Amino acid sequence: MTRKQFRHDMRRGLGNCLLEMELCDKIEDYREDVLWGLQYALAYDAQCEGTRAIYFHDMISLFDDKTAFYEFVADGAKRSIKNDAWRFSHFMGILALMARDGHTPARQAMAELYELLLQAIRTGKKSANRIWSATDNFGFLCVETLTNALQTRAECETFFLRVLRDYGKLIQERPDISFRFEDDWFEHEAAECLGKERVEALLTEAKGNPDIARYLENRNSIKAAREINQATRLSELKEQTETETAQSIYEKLCAGEPVPVFILNRIVRKRGTEEVVKLGRLYTREERDDLREGILRLFFMGDSVSAMGEEELARLMHDAESEKESLREAALRVISKAYGECVRSFALHRLKQNPRDGDAILMLLNNFHPGDGTRLIRLVKSVSLDEHYGDWHSVFIAVRDLIEQNPEADRELSAALLPYMLREGFCSCCRLHLLQLMQPRGLLTPELIEECRRDCNLEIREFIEKTVEI
Image (cartoon, rainbow, N blue to C red; front, side, top):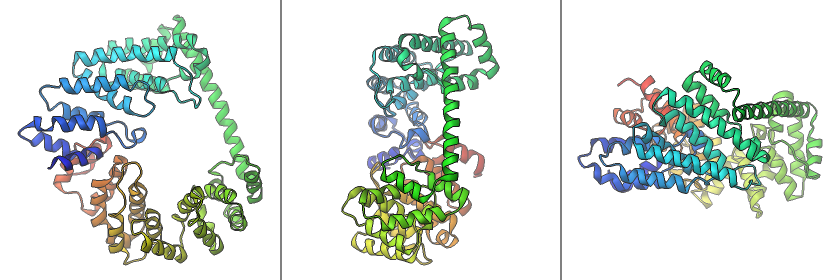
């Protein structure tokens, strides 16, 4: 495997990188590549996939001298304590696994990071958007420490109570942001780690501690308020679903009032498509670009676009060519889900102008005809593979859905596109779904199975172990 291919695959979290390292004669040849990966090969969507901590820890474990990796990860974590993305979590996860292995400097670094984050929370300014990376990162550090870094049950119990005490102190020091000091995730992981009954016993034993009592009182208050708020919102949504009409939605949009984006989807499920059809007609007749755009945003969710007739689709195609970027994008997003020969013709017309038009490819996939396979294989392989701005993700998902739903598309596309998308996509959640499609189609080779045993996504590793026999 060339260095270029190794890095290409590592950015996607593919298991062949780890397999290559396990089989090589000179592991040091990969040191710089792994350091590069620690910096650049982060999870595509860590909120859904989790971080790639285990993937990189498995790589680091193959080296005799781990000093450079530890230093890189520890420094990265310290520099990222106020990072509002997932970089801190990426580094912290690896650091915790090193601490679990008995690496004393990693454990010391985690203790230092704990104190640094506490100080950042004590002295930091509130964020306007209610997102504050210091508290989020502190919560992640606490979970990683509890579940991965600590060695004994006694250590876990001591740490659990310490975290709750520190949260209690923060509530007293920063009452203006006390809503941030409820940590359901940490409590859940403690119950998983120690057992629910043991956690309850620890809290009972510690009920006399004023800091822990303050944390519990704050947590219970937040939960009660959340339950009331959720019940109120559900009641409002139910009432809207039962009483909202196309005209009332239109009037709210005209007045600049908020309209739930899922309202059309809910109305269709509860009352059928009548009001959706009416709103489509209002969209067709509306001359104001901003109002048409507002109506289209309600058609994003669910399958409400299927209620659009020929007039509405004609207007939609017109807006898909608009000079106003936001209106054009809204129209393209909706029309990519629409059915009809006019949509198919529109897609083919756009593809003549630009063979790499991702929106047109989505339209064509959604309006598949038997015999489209050769053309679609070429088009799908031409879409941009830019990790964050390319068309690959939406197009790959559309191909996957088409293969599942259409037997003829399955026959024409699966063998060529499922392995291709598996190799080229950055999303490991999508990769799991692709493997689930490939298995019954006989597309999992012994080599691929071995790679999947080392994939960055632990669900892929579990899938292979549970369902594949070699």
